[in-house]
Length: 142
Image (cartoon, rainbow, N blue to C red; front, side, top):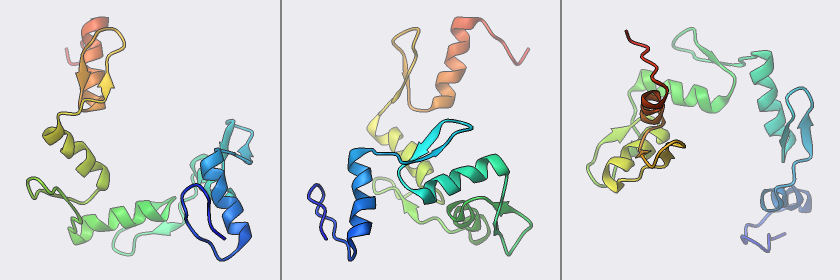
């Protein structure tokens, strides 16, 4: 069974039907307490953990626990010092993919965070938040 939009193939038709929700953006699994909706039940179950605080993934090297397996895998790199995400322009390596994405902006000059009150743009959201204080007059460090 093959998807006509992206040509991804599946062994079962039911898997193709689930996959098609990605393209249609159909969200059949809904959580009424916060109005969140998801295309698959497994995503809803993961989201529910943010409400329950359930942390089923325990680190074997320290006492930390995580709600998602991906968070545990990411945390594990703090113990191994593994840095699998490498910049192809300057060879700097990172333990987190999002850190590499942020780093790449130093090479590309991309500034995706724009101030809604003026024309300034920033490569980091934290820089935008700091900048917004120039409009409000807030001085939190005094």
